[in-house]
Amino acid sequence: DAKTTQPPSMDCAEGRAANLPCNHSTISGNEYVYWYRQIHSQGPQYIIHGLKNNETNEMASLIITEDRKSSTLILPHATLRDTAVYYCIVRVAGTGNQFYFGTGTSLTVIP
Amino acid sequence: KAGVTQTPRYLIKTRGQQVTLSCSPISGHRSVSWYQQTPGQGLQFLFEYFSETQRNKGNFPGRFSGRQFSNSRSEMNVSTLELGDSALYLCASSSGRALGDTQYFGPGTRLTVL
Image 1 (cartoon, rainbow over the protein chains, first blue to last red):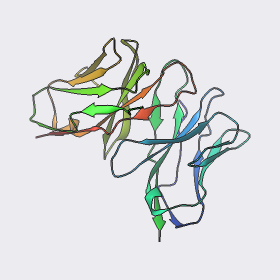
Image 2: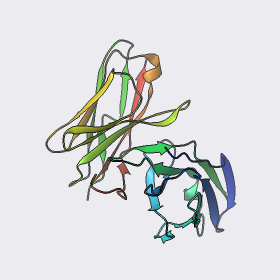
Image 3: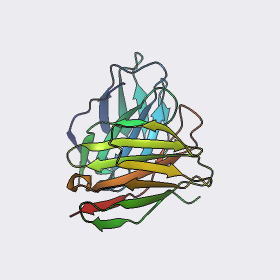
Image 4: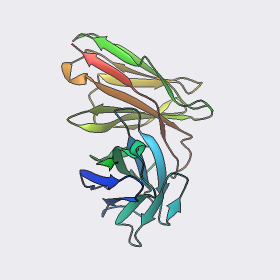
């Protein structure tokens, strides 16, 4: 199963872009990369996901390297409400849904 | 569209008791997955149900079991509770039909075992 590695914590100034990296060097060809965030032990909130192309939605952008061994989540204009633990997840290949959650990155947005 | 709902939100039990947690998925979703979150182990996959059948199972003892009903609602049961079962239990729902499927999580049930 592909595993992910993320820095344990990061700071970002309010209004600036937050770039959260993730390594998933053992990812398989059909495994998607997902990003979720969790605020104060609430349920994780879906942000974005992708297979090999870069993706963008109203919340964030996902940049996946060509070899798919790493990715970066970009929050274009961080606000205080973006302070949370961000999880980079590789969905386990095969049938069904099984997410492997690593330890995540605790992002603190500073005023 | 209503999100994933979990009941109860908080629960206090004593060692040796059993507990049943409930999860109602988003309308139209047929897959429900359960996760346990503890400070020491983080978020860990328990099992997934799709169309009333268990499709995947994590590495948890047999005290943890689940089921899914024909309306896709799911219940999770933990028997003979131990102190270490104190955790936030999360369920997530998805259509369950595609590899690129998105899971949506509920708010969780906070279980405290005394």
